[in-house]
Length: 430
Image (tube, rainbow, N blue to C red):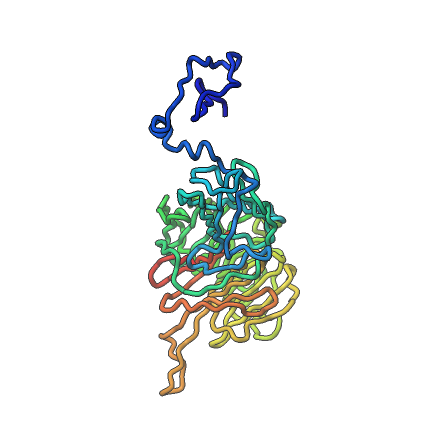
């Protein structure tokens, strides 16, 4: 940020106001002719005509009426616009300016930085791979100063739209997995793998004491909780895969477990366990002491026939997904077990459930093909799909993922959906 010896140089002649007190003597300066100037400073025009924030503008179809519409998430470019840098005379610059774009959430203060592509002609393309599921502030700057129209307060308009079931990425996976910060913990039999979430690169492997099945969770103390379906207990590991302990035994008495499949931990550290065979949800303290349970083996409101999985949404409610005969359901409870509502009458057999940061409910399910010849369901032929609901039960999206055989599902803070392709032992990112 400070001038070096001999700087600044007037390309058209010596500056008359240069004096010895600036540390530069006139005799040290040499007048450059036009050809010498080009040779000495190839980008002299850019130096002579820098971008001026007060003249630089942003434009693009994705910014209008102070809203950011969701585009095809499969292309991972939900927000794209242009920045045109101009000098103080309003003429377009030549590029290589210090241009930056930042999206900041107004509630959670989450910050996302846009990727800048310099076209070399004063035009910059700004890409945000994801946007925030809340009202935000978009700031675009040149040399640290806001350009015309910045900052811009914008609001999102609904959940993103899927136009394709093609995955963005395929990561080597297994029967169940869990997103933890920038990693994915994958269980395949009694082997635990830790993968980088962005690249899928294997970071470490570890042999476990059991073969987890169903969903997993992180305790308030930072331990990994898994369902040992065969031994009807919950196993506790460190995030590196070191065995810490287990609790639970087979039975239907309070505190006993039968067919644990789904796990979720609330803000207080209480563990909610969906028991498939006991048709109930059991709740344990942070120290894994039994507190209470709710649900029973019936199909009415507030009853839980064969629950498969559960999640705790941002509104604090417990959403339980289960299976009836060739049908699925979602039942909603307060955390004390009081029934709130149910929805998903058009659901088929549900396998996993997750909640997004803006309160949408994402469910994986499958349906058996109907045989027109014998008028029976073919249990060996299944069609798998992902269905997305609002918190009050309105279905807003449907994604056909067949022929992939999907298992458990998760949604990260950026809104990307991760689903286990059990048949191919992969994790698909949608």
